[in-house]
Structures are given as C-alpha cells and as structure tokens.
Image (cartoon, rainbow, N blue to C red; front, side, top):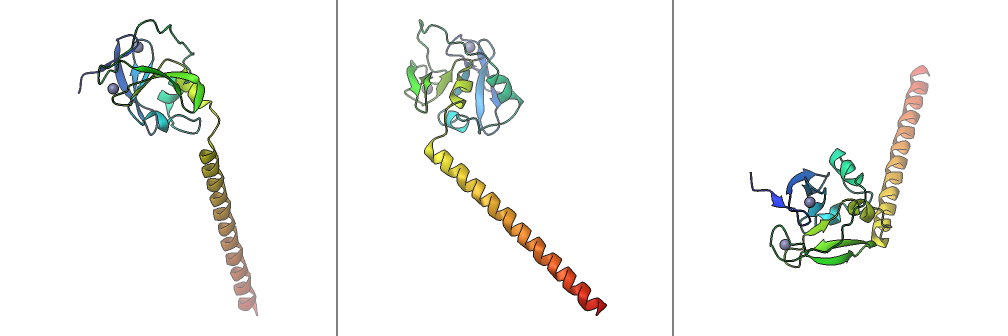
Length: 159
Ligand SMILES: [Zn+2]
Ligand SMILES: [Zn+2]
C-alpha cells in the first residue's frame, strides 16, 4: 500500500474511497475531500456517482474554515489556488495549479451537486428519455404483432 496523502486542511491522513465511478481521498480528520484532476467532474451533479460512501460524504454539514493558513497540494506540495467552481458560483474550491487536483471542505460536494444542469447535460438527459420511449414503443409493437400471430394461428387451427 502507498503512503496516505496528507490532508491540505488539517494534515491528517486521507484514505481513498469509491464514490461510484470516482475514487476520492477522504480526510479522517476534518472529512475534507481530495479529487485528482478530472475526478470531481464525475461527481459534480446530483445525477452522478452512487453508494453509501458518497451518501455519507453528502451528509457532512458545510464547514468552511477561515482560510488563514495556506493549503498545499498533497501530491505536488505547491500552494493551492482558491477558486470558484466553474459550474457552481457558490462553491469556493482549492485547486492545484500543477496537477489540477481539487480539495473540498466538508459539505462543499453537496453544494456543488445542487448546481443546475448545464445545457449540454439537459440535452443528454432529453435524448436518453427519447431513446427509452422509443425502446418501449418498439417492445409494445413486437408484443402486439406476436398477439396478432397467435390469434391468427388460433383461427386457422380451429377452421
Ligand atoms: Zn483534513
Ligand atoms: Zn498538485
């Protein structure tokens, strides 16, 4: 096993946990979350991710400490940049300028997941719904044809 990453906020060890499709480092001390580059995008809307670990992380109350001390990346040791999450202006996240990893204080993931869907996500959801409807329609048509054949066979057999 590799050495655990130190939490950027409190220095306690972080342990990787599966949140459905993404692996997240969870701090044993402050319950902050570390996402490697691109991982946060897998969990940044209420439709993404699954599992009891994710549910537990989403129940954490929002606790944003004063950013008095600087925070550094657990992988690159460079200072994290405080930024607003691009899809959720209410959420202030800490981003590593080197590796693109992101640190979230407890409760910030829930805040980020409450963001409205983007136009692209809405389009994707609409086309998924359309495909589901078309599949259901085709299945109903197949069933109708099968019933018709069964009736026909019944008529022919009795005639
Ligand atoms: Zn911590
Ligand atoms: Zn980094």
